[in-house]
Length: 260
Ligand SMILES: Cc1cc2nc3c(=O)[nH]c(=O)nc-3n(C[C@H](O)[C@H](O)[C@H](O)COP(=O)(O)OP(=O)(O)OC[C@H]3O[C@@H](n4cnc5c(N)ncnc54)[C@H](O)[C@@H]3O)c2cc1C
Image (cartoon, rainbow, N blue to C red; front, side, top):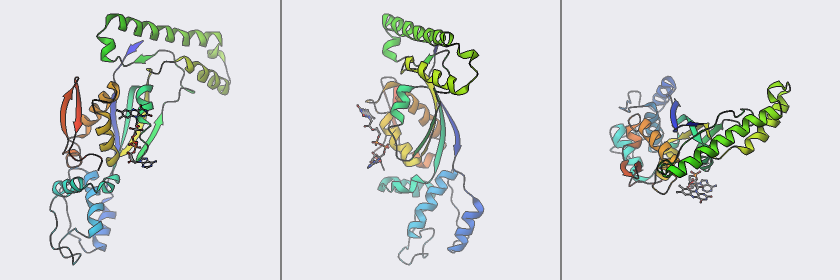
């Protein structure tokens, strides 16, 4: 068996179609509008927010005599007043590797604003097993011994089943799939796997708040601490209100503006 820790890869993010945006700005008569947004995601959220009140510049809407200048100030107010639908527009695409099925079971409970693609254990045959070791197991010699022995035993069963059914010499893919799916029933829930996870920024904020909370499970706290570290400086104006408190060796990412 192999000991692993969750790994986070940010593989995609929102990109502005500059010509399309300029055409829109020309259409509403604010040709020269610019922003100092540090990322396209933050720029898009600002544009979607400003179009609501025609607040790109004063006078566009006769009711608006002053506008908030700058992306940080603008998005800071959006977060402050909880106008969260605006930050649903930009998205991020992650791949989480070496995460257990414990984590993926928890992750899929977040339905709003997400998309998921999970490694299929009907198609991908298990030979070696990898796992995250929770701190309380790692710290206890006997606990660790049971943990490792069980994983090694279950790993051996996968190889034995493959031999019993001679799956390597099976030509029909449909039969291999049926067998692989049957064998996975003897895999532990702590088995490390891979999931692609996409979310919008409103969802990211909600999940960061929920899943780094000290009441959440250790591995998902570890995972979302990694996510936070990867994105906090990339999107400072959408995530700048967070503070970190270390609890039990893991960061609790918290804010006064919960669940916008
Ligand atoms: C510490 C912790 C312990 C947990 N323990 C358990 C447990 O013991 N058992 C268990 O089953 N689950 C448990 N969960 C999972 C939890 O109940 C939620 O299912 C999970 O956190 C997803 O969050 P969410 O409901 O906010 O959904 P999300 O999909 O993240 O949705 C975000 C928000 O959108 C709104 N929303 C989404 N879908 C709907 C809808 N269909 N209708 C109306 N509004 C909607 C809600 O306001 C929701 O909060 C736990 C979660 C945590 C963080």
